[in-house]
Amino acid sequence: MERKATVKLDDLITEIEIQMDETLTYINIQTGEVITLSREEMRAAEDEELLDNYPDWERENIEQAIKIIEDEDEVYLDFTLRNEFHEYELIEEFIETLDKAEVREKLFGAIQGRGAFRRFKDGIIEHDVERQWYEFKEKKVKELVMEWCKEKGLIIEE
Image 1 (cartoon, one colour):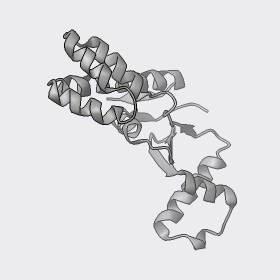
Image 2 (spheres, helix red, strand yellow):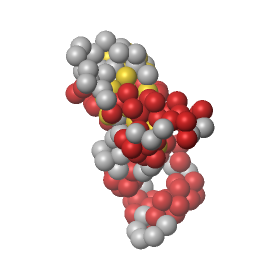
Image 3 (cartoon, one colour):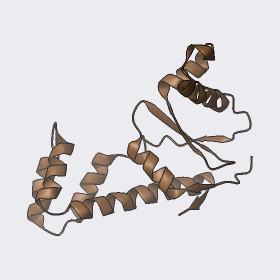
């Protein structure tokens, strides 16, 4: 099927940043709509339970999930990139870019073991590199999304 719709880069970046283990994200390649569903909603759609058993707000999502499951025209593209986005690796890459060896050493130490993300967040504030981190992360996520869209033949609206 020919991909016609334009997808909004900001919508996709936001999806990557909020994707949780219990959610799945799809793109309607005809409309560009980004759809996020819970695993529970997808299971309900697969179980073919009566939709009347669900509240209205959940029923709409389950109906959307049914459309995705039964998608013979390949209108829906799976955009669940949690396996391609590894924040810990991104953190390591960011730390390597820092100029001051002392800051690099402290941050590398902070990301070892349990509580690594919390210590990293505290460390970037303490060493005044928080802005640099968020700019670095935004750039890398944008690159990931743009590369993925290019591979899938999607047109991006920035």
